[in-house]
Amino acid sequence: MKEKGKTENCIKDEREEYVPVDDKVKDFWSRIDKSVVIQECDDTSESPVCRVCECKYNRLEEARFWSRILQEHALFIKLGLPADQKEFREEAESFIELFKELRKRLDKAKELKGDLLEDLIKAVKAIIDFKARLLRQIIQCRKAPGSNFPLLLDHIRREAERFLGLLLKPEPEDALSLLLQQEAFWLRIMKEHIELVIHLLDPSERELIEQAEEFRKTFSRLLETARDLESMDDTKPKNFNTVIRFTEDVVRHTMELRDFKAAAYELAVMCKILGIISTPLLLDHIRREADKFLDELEVMLPEVIRCQSKCKKAKDE
View 1 (cartoon, helix red, strand yellow):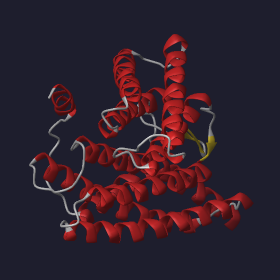
View 2: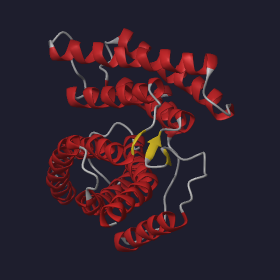
View 3: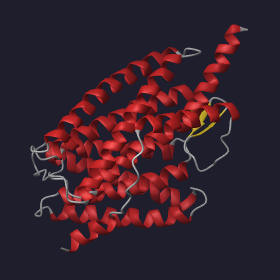
């Protein structure tokens, strides 16, 4: 009962008014067009931050987002572990507390450096090792997985690896290349979210499963295309307008998926969904990651469009 209470305390009621996806897409591109025209990017709280066709991640903002994500990863692992795996459960609990304290320090910080940065890097490396050790034990059939799918553990390990990379290498990158990297990373994450949700839903939830299967097909195709475009970008073309068209599709489908996740979360909170989802927080967690993907696209796209326009203008002249 005590653990259930802890879990419930992590859940916040973040219900929202429904807005049609078409309206959201129009609003999204309206903001993009405005950013392209007025070339505003002075908000230092955004991440990435773009300047002169190059973009760089804001480590403090990334740390605030990902530290919460990693704290929740530890919670999900603990909830999925069998009761007899006491050591792993205690280790998961220690990570919950560790990232809880780091989040408090990050909320007070004005920049990420010194002891805070070192402690954060150390914590991220430690939880990566924890996830990898647990995954190895399951793969080698030395530990029962409980309800922790091997793909789930690999999925959350890769997310932590990406965060560690952002902490260690914040150098600016070409805007177009970074956009394609983002899309390849996040589209795989979105696809795996869908696959995991399908396996967590009760077989009787046929309508939800059918909707999720359609999303899985869509995001599998989008991921393949993103990887193809990223490979083509290795040739360093001066402009690559197809990426803008592709990103339009990515934005629309990600908004639709984001709304599906939000609706599933509300159903779980109201006890109107059947399955083996350990906590509604899991559904809110994956919804926030979809929002993060859209936020990154909104920052990157104006810079990519500006840079593509400059290249086209130079070519025409």
